[in-house]
Length: 381
Image 1 (cartoon, one colour):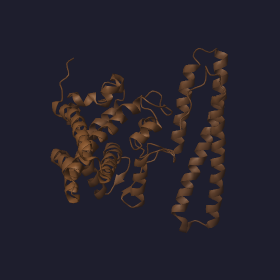
Image 2 (image 1 turned 90 degrees about the vertical axis):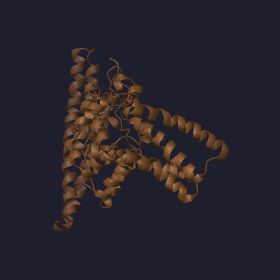
Image 3 (image 1 turned 90 degrees about the horizontal axis):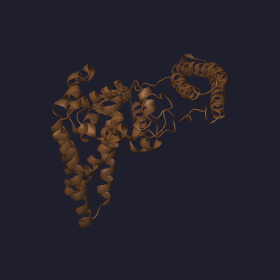
Image 4 (image 1 turned 120 degrees about the vertical axis):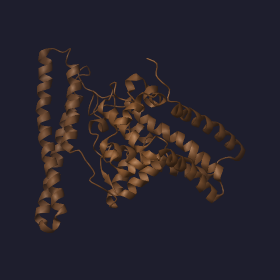
């Protein structure tokens, strides 16, 4: 079936990298690049890209936390500077992606090809029809609705007008427009596009093997933390993508910092129990595939042993989760809780963590010692 080209978007997405390359090349040849230009490029790239990841994505598309009006306004202004459509349209497409991942209703379905998921879907008009059914919660948000209504003006002003004004203030309008406006918007586009393409191609699937979404530290570094994508698709309401403390997720750190400053609240976190159980169920599904060609006796033996260890892990993580919640409540109400009670809870918590680590170590050890023909894919993270 012939698809209609989305000419406005297609011309913009094709012309901007061409213009950035030609103008940038000529300007570098004639004038070089200054440290101020590169600094503004980097700072404005970080601000606009994280307005997409923390604002458009985790706040507006997933409601993973709540933010003060000042923060929401900043996301909408600097998110518009990324020139990726309004927050209303962006979140509408993204919710459709989550609801229909890897199926026909997925606007950037990677099963239609890497290039389709990366940029091809934007060059045709098919996905635009879905925006008529915009999420009611976003349409009811007056800030989101206002940005959508005046999007072109806001986007042009923030994307190109703002860098030009900063450049005028420091005596370098064209250099700042080039690096902070044109080059920065091209780089920002493809950072976001990688979440739709590379994050569904490169990496492991430790939480849900049925999804194309994958966890990869490489993608996470390139996309300000959006690369732990298998976790995200399994637990989309969590404000984190990188769930472990050491996972590279600057967007998570930004949101947590806003919470400490009183500018964000109600950060949604999936309980540890659900995350661990998801990883075990994923391992079990992969193992079941590998057991299909084994003898019934061998398959039953392996499954029985893993079921035994799985029960130990479930009990350990359930106890740990309960103690963590109890300890958090006790600390929040420290004035009403005795010092002895807090010390006792802390000791119980240390014991529960040790018990869980040992149980999880047994699970991973048992998986590792299976024959290569039976062993599931390594557990990520």
